[in-house]
Image 1 (cartoon, helix red, strand yellow):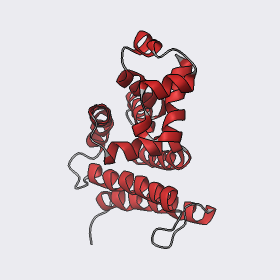
Image 2 (cartoon, rainbow, N blue to C red; image 1 turned 120 degrees about the vertical axis):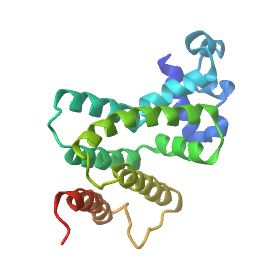
Image 3 (tube, rainbow, N blue to C red; image 1 turned 180 degrees about the vertical axis):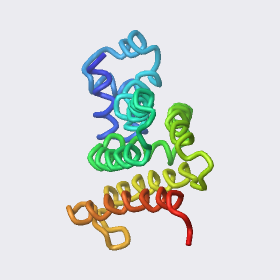
Length: 200
């Protein structure tokens, strides 16, 4: 099972998402193709198992829900900042997840649609905690986080595929990386401060 799961990543890296076939995966794993059906039931279930192990947000959201469930008084800002910065670091180095995301947004796929819907359901659990904290305050946290997550995805994919800068920032350098991280913190700070301080 381990060989088959690992081989999904190997094939994805070498051939991209069109190469995720039973023949290619079983060949990369060096095992009989029948084992995919025996262990996972189908190719889609095998790929799903692989993605679940690589998807940052699926595991991060579970951890967030558990964290807030045990510490209901802890504010969401610091935790959200940590989630986004860690996502940036993870996605920057996780070339397999980069290919998965490119697959997700460029090709219509039932599997990718289902995985995205599951992420949405899990993120809703986190936002439920933030909603209690921000109740009555004029802050659309979901929209702010959407822009930040989308920005992280785009700048990493742009850098990985074009090897060029975005708005003259090169995230392949420590300086560029720090500028983006600092701005993520600043944007969250501006958003939260906008509802914590009275408007002049």
